[in-house]
Length: 248
Image 1 (cartoon, rainbow, N blue to C red):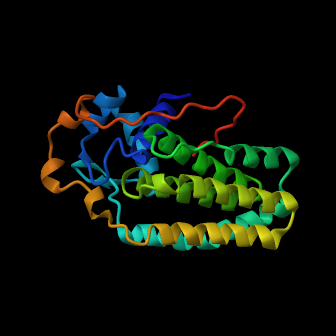
Image 2 (image 1 turned 90 degrees about the vertical axis):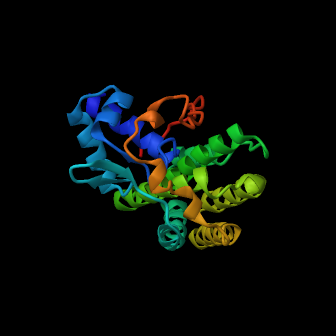
């Protein structure tokens, strides 16, 4: 992996999991210090993340982690309400036996309610589950759209929308989608996926993302946030044995 690739991967993971908080302003020098890299890899990584909607380039000042907003959240779910049923239907028609095993695997996580580590692991498996369905459509454009959507949604699940109490229900819904896809019945798969999106929207109807964005006073020029003692570092998900993690 190139230096630019390493920085991009690590920086993106920190943005997705909200180790770098939404709304956080940071200089190029601070990023160079944290990721032990020169300016060029940092600039390339930030440019890619800007194109993906995860960071904003502030001319002559540095970068800002894209804030979470209720508008973006609703927009993402409007897209998901159209994409997920379509992808499930196509997967039911096109998935290879190997892809069916992959989808089934990512839906098999035994979720433990009340355990934060289990919740964060579930979020990664949830992303991989939806990406596996996207891959099974055999449509690269759909897969790319699904990847961007899932990555941007994950920040909300990490920081704002705590689904802990719904863990068992989410797993059950995933397994119902798998069952429909395995049956090869496109309409049934589409219906199960649509129900899953609708249920998720209903579960999160009362969210307020205002508290997820740092106030300006707390993200001014100080580099203190870079210290590991001041950062809320969440446990990184390890690759399960036999699983194939999809890059995002």
